[in-house]
Image (cartoon, rainbow, N blue to C red; front, side, top):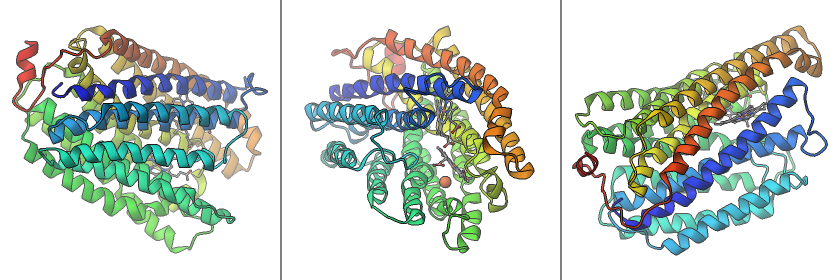
Length: 455
Ligand code: HEM
Ligand code: HEM
Ligand SMILES: [Fe+2]
C-alpha cells in the first residue's frame, strides 16, 4: 500500500461482501418459492424478495466499485485521497440509504420498476451521495501528479454511471416512455459505462499482476472502450422490440447488440494475451486467476448468452422468461462480481500485510463459486427453455408452466449450495486477512518491489 488513505477501501469491500451474503439469502427464498415452497409468502412475498435480491446485487457491486476506486485513484494519481474523513461519511451515508431502501421494499415502499425500485425521495439522497463520492475521487485525481488512461477511464465510467441514473428519475405517465428511459439506466449501465469501469479495473490489475508495459495494456483499453460505445449505445434497441417503440429498433437493436459480444471477446483475448506475455511472476496468483476468470466468464455470460436472445426473432419468444435470468446471473457474476473479487484479492494482502492468497481456501473459493454459478446458469437455461416452449409455443397457462418446471429449481438450489459454499470460503478468507494495518508500506508498483517484499 503506497498511500495510507487507500485503506478506506476496506470499509467498502467488507460492506460489499456482507450485502452479497444477504443477497444469497434472498436468492434461496426465490429458489425455494420456485420449487413450490413459498413458505415466507405472508412476510416476504416473491416480488419483495426478487426486488431485494436484485437491488442488493446492485448496491454491493456499486460498493465494490467505490472501494476499488478509492484504492486505484490514489495509486494512479500518486497522492493521498483528498479526505479520508469525508470518504468515511460517504460510506456511512451510502449504507444508511441502502438499508432504508431495502427495509422500505418490505413495507411496500417502492416504485415497482425492475432494478429501479428505489422510491423517488431516496433517489435524491443517492444523487447527493454519489456526488460526494465523485467529488472526492475527482479532486484526488485533479490534484494528483499523474493522469493515466486507466485512472481517467475509471473516472469517466463512474461519472457517466452517475449521469445515466438521472433519466430513470424522470416521471412519465406513459408506460412506453417510462420503459424507454428505464433502459437508459439499466442497459447503458451494464452494457456501456460499467464496462468502462470493468475495463479500467482489468487494465489496472493486469498492469500490476503481469508486469506488461502500461503503454501496451492501455492501448487495448482504448480499443475496448471504442467497441463498447460503438455497439452498446445503439444496442439499447434490443430492449425496444415490441414494446411500443418505433419499428426501426428491430433492425438497429438487432445489428448493434449483435456486435456487443465483441467488446467482451476483446477483453477476454486481451487479458489472456497479457498474462501470457507478462514476464513477471507475481506471487498473488489467485488475484490473477480472478482477473482472468472475469475476462473469460464475462464473455460467456454477457457476450455469448446475451447473443443467445438478442435478435428480435428469438427475443420475441424468450423475452422476460427464465432465459433472461440465465443470462442475467452469469453476466453479472462474470463481469462485475468477479472484477470486484479480483480487486479484493489483490488489495487485501497489501492492506493487511498478510499473504493469505496461498493454500486451499482461496483456491476452493474460486473453484466452488465458479462451478456453482455455471451450474446455476445451466439450471436456469433448462427451466427457461422449457418455459418458453410450454408457455409460448404450446400455449399453456403461465402458472401451470411454472408448476411443471418446479423440478429444475431443485437443480438450481443444489447448484446454489455449491456456489454459496464458495462465497462463504471467500468471505472467510477475507475475515482471516483481518483489518488494515497502519504500518504496512509494501508497494506493489510496476518495478516489482512487492515481489521482493514477500519473497
Ligand atoms: C455484463 C454485461 C451484461 C449484464 C450484467 C447483463 C444483464 C442483464 C439483465 C439483468 C437483464 C434483465 C434486465 C431486465 O429485464 O430488467 C438483461 C437483459 C437482456 N440482455 Fe443482458 N447483460 C449484459 C450484457 C448483454 C449483452 C452483451 C447482450 C447482447 C449480446 C445482452 C442481451 C440482453 C437482452 C436481449 C436482454 C433482454 C431479455 C428480455 O427480453 O427479457 N446482454 N441483461
Ligand atoms: C444463492 C444463490 C442464488 C440463487 C438461488 C438465485 C436465485 C434467483 C432466482 C430464483 C431469481 C428469480 C428469477 C425469476 O424472476 O423467476 C433470481 C433473480 C436474479 N438474480 Fe439470483 N440467485 C442467486 C445468486 C445471484 C447472484 C450471485 C447474482 C449476481 C451475480 C444474481 C443475480 C440475479 C439477477 C440479475 C436476477 C434478475 C434476473 C432477471 O432479470 O430475469 N443472483 N435469482
Ligand atoms: Fe441490454
